[in-house]
Length: 114
Ligand SMILES: [Zn+2]
Image 1 (cartoon, rainbow, N blue to C red):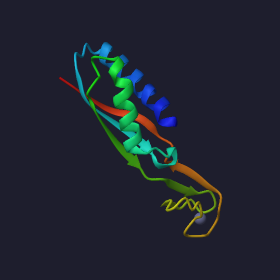
Image 2 (cartoon, rainbow, N blue to C red):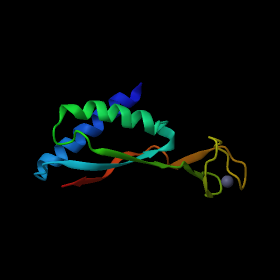
Image 3 (cartoon, helix red, strand yellow):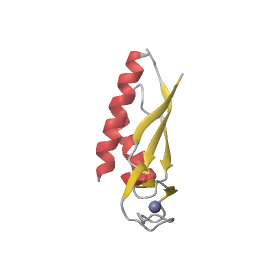
Image 4 (tube, protein in one colour):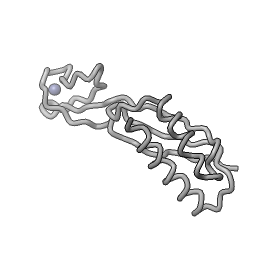
């Protein structure tokens, strides 16, 4: 289950950020995850709740996951489009050589603290 490793990474980032900002208690963490990461939000939240126990600052914080859809750009005609159902084919010219513009992200976008 790769969610456990991701949860640990997120926790490390949040703990470090909290220390740098002298935060006593983190209440909410916003994460942006590209669809290509294949993250199951419920699983990531479950794993995060588990690993967060090792930090009294982060324990109990809510993890909010925003999934970013896949966006591609055709290398042939430069058309930009949303990739539906993992079909990497340009809807304009049916070219199959596509640059991925969005979908591989994984980042902590916001941390709310009290
Ligand atoms: Zn095209």
